[in-house]
Image 1 (cartoon, helix red, strand yellow):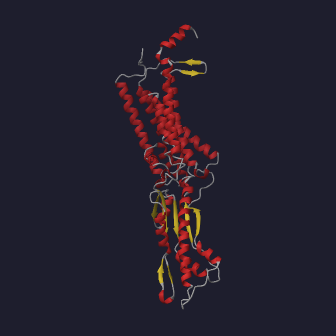
Image 2 (tube, rainbow, N blue to C red):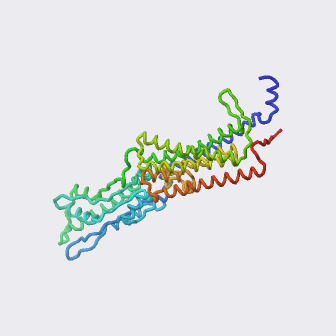
Image 3 (cartoon, rainbow, N blue to C red):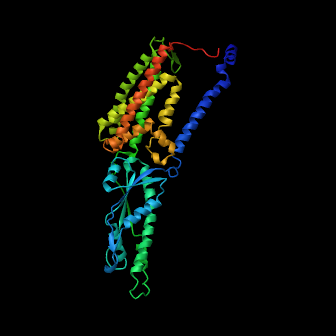
Length: 441
């Protein structure tokens, strides 16, 4: 470097070392936000659990117990339901008492993550167990079924099993104590003498009288990545729109001569094309729409080629076109509105805030409450719901597809209106992209 160049660097305030602090500060703040969002949503799901929906179905019809002259109606199912409502923390789990049909409907729509089912013959079987424990013969333990809903998310099943097993194990213990005491009372002789001692095998059988059966409501087919393909497919759609908007913005600006282009050691800067901001944005939007039509098809073909379970290719393709176009057009409008700063804004909006609030891995109800607020409008969550509905719930509108469609259309409309208003305003004010503003001379 020559002496004159060294002097120029010293005199130019934009080349002084303190000016280099700006990107360091920006990146530090950016990464602090990234680290907070990504770690906060996954570090302790059990601590963050709130409003986690689980259905409780009590079909127990009760039973009649006691000697013929003093029979009484009992319903152990009601007692267990009451114990579950008392034992499961209400601030963490939303326990919904439903009929079997309504519970199955909510499971099919992805509205609840699991169901606890007490069968109709529960009290009868429990009574038979009490009698059979001291009388020879074959008996079967009463059962309670814990149904999981693996189609709602990969991590959901683990939470349902943990919550359900902890609560039902405690209930099983309480029922065992009550049944043991009941059997001891029945063994007291009429003359009031001491009751015979229960054998060890009898005490063991009565201590844990309930069989807890854990089973999936609708098992996921192969090729679903244990419920993760919906999340990653939604992520691909978001990235296609985001990266597509950045790429189209940069390459078309270079072709129009707005910004230079570097290819290795070669530096190219085409003559600037005289074109309004609005027309430039229209061209970028058009390229984005064409890109979404192609890329969405590529994703479907790649998924099928890799053995991914896709039952409705056409629906997935069309939803993918909408999602990519909505994200890409909105991203281009933000870039048109605020320029290069739009790159960071788009990353924050679509990726940093979007991924942890998507509900694709850890459910929203197992993350800090502010993620639930973000999920109301963040694009990633809406796209995930739509993709999950198509892949796992047969395109059921109630399972998230309706929300995914309408929110994607709303996002597309916001992007179109934002781009239209901002670029037309800039053009009318004469703020053309050919105008140069020199600062700090």
